[in-house]
Length: 559
Image (tube, rainbow, N blue to C red; front, side):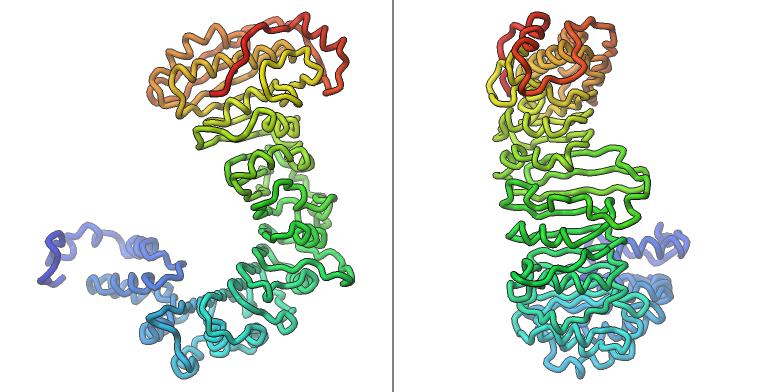
C-alpha cells in the first residue's frame, strides 16, 4: 500500500499490507465481511459507492471484489456510466435496477437514448425499483420490455403524469413477475391491467389516490390467477363492492402467509374477507385507526373461510397470546409447526373503548392463554371496569404479564364486579365474578413506583389473591416481579408471611437483589366452588360465600 499525503490525522498508512490485521483474514472470510458491510439487498445510492470505495483500498481487495460478480448487481440509473460498468462486472449474476427521481436528477426526457445500453442486460433483470413520476416509470418500463413479461400491459395501465410520488417495484423469477408493488399512483386503468400473473407471490398496493383504487371484484379476478400468492397488502387501495354488481365465488389462496388491509370503511374490509379463503395460519394485520369495535372489521363467520385441507392439518395453537399496547392489539398463535398473528393497529385515544368492546371478539380471544399488557405511561386512562370487560372475554387465561400504569387496574379487575368500577367488591355482591379462573402465574414489571407505592400495591394485590384463594380453593402458582431496585428483596421479605397464604412461589428478578421464595405449603380453603357464579347468581349462594369468605379490609387504590 502506497503512503498517501493530505490524509486525516487519525489515518495511518502502513507500507506493509501483510501487517494489517484484516489482511490476515482468508479471502473467503474477508469477502463475507465486505458483503455484510455493504448490505447488497439495499436500494440506496450509497450502496454502489461502498462497492467502489472498497475496490480501491488496495490491489488485493480490488482483485477480490472484481472476482465477486454478486457484489456489483445493484444498477443505479442515476449514474448511467457507473451503472453500465456494474452491469458488465456483475456478469453472469442477476441484476437489480433502480432509479429514484430527485431535484438534482429529474430523469431523462428520452430514456431509450440515455439507457439504451440496458436492453442487452434485461434477460438478467431480477428486480426493478423506480420512484419517480408516472411518465418516467412508463419510459423505463418501455425500456425493459420483455416478450415473456406482461410489462407492456402494466405500463399501458399507468397514466402519463409528470408529478413525482408514485413508486413501482417488481421482482422477477423464472421469467415471471413474482413481486409487484404499486404505491402513490394517482390513477390506474385496472381494465388494461394484466390478469394472468401466475407466478405472483407478493402484491402490494399502497397510498393510491381514490381514482386509482381497485374495485374488489376486479381484485378478486386478478388474484384468482395467483395460486402462489404469499403476501397481499392493501392499504388505502380498494373500492367497496359496487351496488348491483354480481356476487363472485370466494378466491382460494392456499399459500397466503400474510394479509394486511386498511380502509376508511370497515364494510369494504368485510366484503373482501368474505370472498377470500386462506389457511388458518395466515397472519392478518388491520389498520383500524378510528375503529372502536374491532369485530366490525370481520365477517360474522370469520374463521370458516379456510382453504380446503388446511383444517385437516393437526396444527392447533399451543399458546395464544393477547398483547396490548397503546397503539395495537395482537393475538399471536404459536403452533407446533407454524406461528401466526392477528394485529390491530388502533388510535391511542381509542384504547379504552376498544378493550371495552373486546368481548365482541370472543371468537378470537376466548382461547387466549397469555395476556401481556405493559404500559409505558405514568397514568392510565383505562379503568378497572374496562379491564374487567377484557378479562371476562378470556376465560382460559393462565398467565398475565403487566406493568406500569396498567398493572393496578388490570390485577385488581381479577375480582372486580362487572357493573361497578369502585372498590371494595365484597363476594356477596350479586354481580361478583372471578375473572380468569384458570390463572396460574403473574409476571409484574416494576419500573416507576417508589418503595412505598410498591409495598402498598403488593399488599393490595395480596388481598385480591386472598379473595381468589377463598373462592377457588387454591393458591396462585407463581408470582414473578422484575425490578431494578436493591430494596426489592427486603420488601418481599417483609411481605412473605402475607404471600405464603396465597402464592406457591415468589421470584424476584433483579440484578441488584435476586431472590426466590418457595411458599408451597397447604392452605385450607374457606370454601370450594367448582364453577364460577354467573352475573345472575342467586342471593342465597352469595350469602353462603360471604359467611365463609368475607374480607374486612379497606379498598386498595391503584398507584
